Image (cartoon, rainbow, N blue to C red; front, side, top):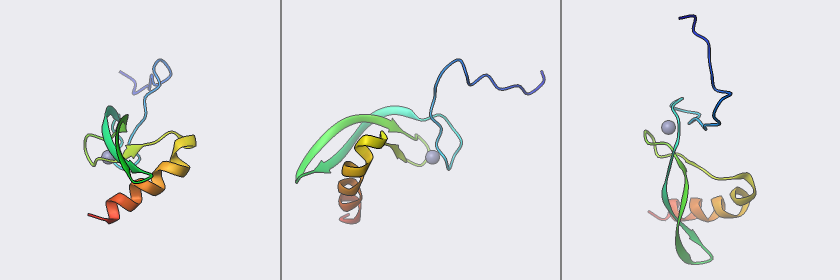
Length: 70
Ligand SMILES: [Zn+2]
């Protein structure tokens, strides 16, 4: 085999730290004082969550707050 990549066939997101494919999983976030459980792409290794850009601006702020609160 000649180390060729075939990542064009399927769009998969990689964790920027671990370089492994992210998997869909339920993630608990806090938004407007309420807890939500939504499905997002999550790294099975380090737990990094991928949030779509349009959601990221608003929701990641809340997620960060809830993480700081631990
Ligand atoms: Zn990772």
